[in-house]
Image (tube, rainbow, N blue to C red; front, side, top):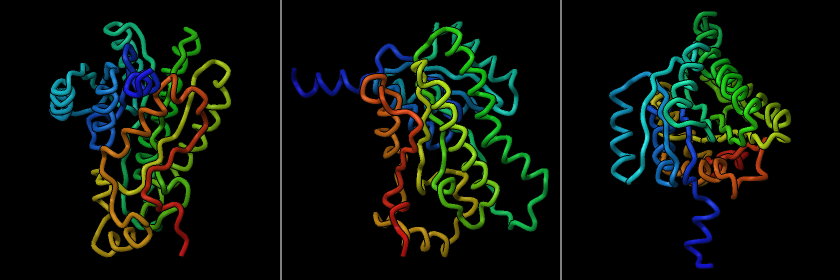
Amino acid sequence: MQPATYLKDLFSLQGKTAVVIGGTGELCGTMAVGLARAGAEVVLGGRIPEKAEQRLAEIESHGGKGYFVPVDVTSRDSLQNLLDTVLQRSGKVDILINGAGTNSPTPFLQIGEEEYARIMDTNLTAIFRACQVFGKYFVENSQPASIINLGSISGLNPLSRVFTYSASKAAVHNLTRNLAREWADKDIRVNTLVPGFFPAEQNRKVLDESRVLDILRQTPASRFGNAEELIGATILLASPVAGSFITGMEMIVDGGFQAMTI
C-alpha cells in the first residue's frame, strides 16, 4: 500500500456528516474547513448567516460541501431543529463538535449573577443540551459517532481574569469524561479538544499588552497558535479509524503552555 493511500484510509472522513456548532466562529470555522477537506459533509451551526457564507465559500473552494443551519445553543428546541434538519437533508450525523462559547474579563467580586448564568449557559449547559439531543439520536439508532467538546487550557488550570469561563470549561472537561465512560460500549467516542491561546474573538476581550507578554513567557513555542493548527487534532479525534480507541481524552494543543511551571 502506498503511503498516501494508507494515510487517506487512516484519516479520511469521506461519507461522514459533521455538525459543527459554533462553526461560524474563528476556531471552529477553521476546524470545519479541515473536516470538509478530509471528506466530510459539514453543517455549520451558528447565529450569523454572513459568517457562515464566508466559511461555506472557503469549503467549496477546496472541493468540499456543506450548508448552514441557524441555531441558538441556549434553546433545546433550536438544537433539536438542528438535528432534525440535518437528518432530513443528510440522512445521518457521524461527528458533533460543540464549540460555541463566550467570555468576560469582569473581576470576580464584580461578576453579577446574570453574567455568571449567561456564561455558564453558553459554555456548559449548551453542551449538556447538545449532547443530550444528539446523544439520544446516536444511542437509539446505534449510530457510531465522535463528539468533540471544546474545552480550554483554563479548564485544566484556572487563569486570572476569566473566572466564570474557567469554571465553565473545567465542567465541560468533566462532563466529557463522564459521557465517554457512559457511551464507550456503544461506539460513541467523546473527547475534549483543549486549545491553548489562539486568536479567537473571545480571547481579544481579555488580552492587553501585559497579558500577551505573560502568555508568551509561559508558552515554550513563544507565540500564539494559528487556527489551522487545530485541524490535525480535530481530524484525529473525528476519524473512526485513526481515533477508534480514543475516548475520554483531553487533547491539548497549546505550544507547550501546559508543560511550563517556572
